[in-house]
Image (tube, rainbow, N blue to C red):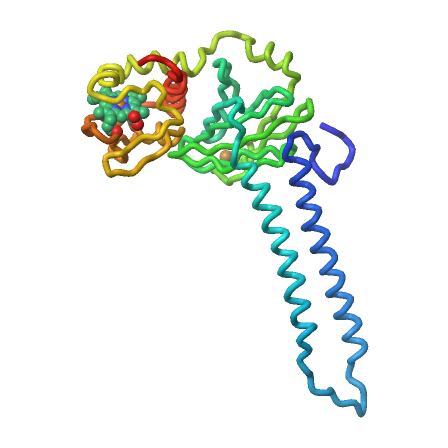
Length: 307
Ligand code: HEC
Ligand SMILES: [Cu+2]
């Protein structure tokens, strides 16, 4: 870490400069009006202070003044709104080619798995210049994955997938915090994010070679939990399912994203595929969060394949 005193955390992702610019704008507007208002208070308090023999004149409404000090703040807040929501929307929408890394939060650690299979705890290695999408869930309570140098923070809620994405723009090591109070050892739920050059990252991720890729583990689980005994026969094929539109028995249509797949496995009766019987047993309580992620990785890997 840099030893010098710093006003800001380092800027290490594509979101750091725009977030800082917005923040500076808010700060400048706030400082300007704070000073203006205090200056007016002091000036007017002195000018109209109570003096012997002087009586206050009745106040007349000045419409021009009223309109001005309504319209200017209104315009300013609109600027803030569109600026901030534009940035917010960008931060919600990872590019299609982003590399997905799985994160499972538990009390009190971050468990991370890369697409190649390599796992790490309380650390996140990422390659420079590559859009990264974190697919995150939690085992019990709400945590929040906060990377100050990247200016990104996202609550990690049990029972669903939350995403966070960014493109690292500066090699180095930066803080990783849990930003949601999650129990007695919340303050120890800290770690680091390590931005490496693509070549370093490739070497690192190939590293020890002991961890299997999520999709490979998922393929094994698919037979182990006998998903294959139904799927392909009495149940819909899962090939090319991810990202497709699924027609449900109640007439609705839904895009098969991570959260839909997760629900299909853990609460299969919540949404029934049109034309099928609700035969599928629930796997809630039988699979760990990692295993659900592995199964989803396997289903995703069935893209552009024959059933
Ligand atoms: C007893 C048979 C059976 C087993 C075992 C089974 N399923 Fe299913 N599954 C179904 C049926 C039938 C449907 C379609 C009706 C529905 O939506 O529940 C389905 C639907 C799904 C869907 C949604 C499919 C779509 O087209 O939208 C997914 C994903 C899924 N199953 C995954 C799994 C996984 C993973 C396993 C193993 C952990 C599994 N299933 C085990 C019968 C089964
Ligand atoms: Cu936490």
